[in-house]
Image (cartoon, rainbow, N blue to C red):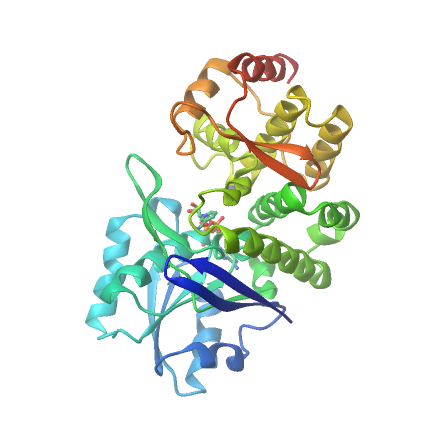
Length: 366
Ligand SMILES: NC(=O)c1ccc[n+]([C@@H]2O[C@H](COP(=O)([O-])OP(=O)(O)OC[C@H]3O[C@@H](n4cnc5c(N)ncnc54)[C@H](O)[C@@H]3O)[C@@H](O)[C@H]2O)c1
Ligand SMILES: [Zn+2]
């Protein structure tokens, strides 16, 4: 097992907590108990994850006289809303959860975001622990303190920054994850190599087959190196005023792809993979990288069995969709571009003609 120390510069000062990464660590009570403020916890999970891991967690806690209140929600992004949040509050109140009752999120990014927001607001903030069980949640969404829910008018529009007391990423829980969800999570892992860690990118090129086979040694290392990268970016810029924006590589195009395909048709990581190839092509047109790098980027996604092209790409439609993205400021679309593999930069002055030409070329050729 590895422990990563997250030392985040938050609005209320420096805040540190551990991230534990390893195989079969869900039943290691000594990792969880020191972070509990009282011998009572509420565990928020969903109908898919509960039958797989809830009993194991409850057992671990019960053996140490910790009383658990399970809160089992329906599964799906469509439940990341006010109604479900209220369901959590109802259960917390009915079970007399107090200001020092820890709330544990056991599940993927949807459960993590919902539970984190509930913890941030219940009794004006209660202790919170993340136990992420999807690859995306272990390497990305559980880290960084962004919590929240969706609104009918857009995703993740309501929320709070709220840091957990601890994150426990047990890679063995990923054994039950569908292959498609697992591969989708790999897109975010590749992202860390591309934006700031050339050596990690090379390691991924060499180890992709073993990662896809979920070999625990390789998987643990990939998760650990991803967590370290995310922590280092967020540590300096919790609220995304600057450097944190590089985490959005491929996401401006990716969100447009998710939207154009119809939400849920493409998984997030699939859209980010194809979106990153577009960002790489734009970087090439802006003379930041060459075609060799673009081809190398495409190759790693193909190795990971992720999509690299966008079928039926319609330039006008994509320009429109990107104009509506949250990351647009004062009419300028901000793109994360690559200066090399392992070095990203945020660019707000891509000429519209260059962007249009790149999209048109992709819509003709692919
Ligand atoms: N807070 C952030 O910084 C941040 C960053 C990225 C994404 N997100 C959010 O994360 C969400 C996506 O998260 P996700 O990709 O984990 O999706 P998810 O939470 O919907 O999980 C995907 C599916 O896998 C199931 N599942 C979870 N763990 C499992 C396991 N171990 N075995 C079998 N099935 C399992 C879930 O029940 C679900 O059906 C989105 O809502 C997105 O907005 C947040
Ligand atoms: Zn993402």
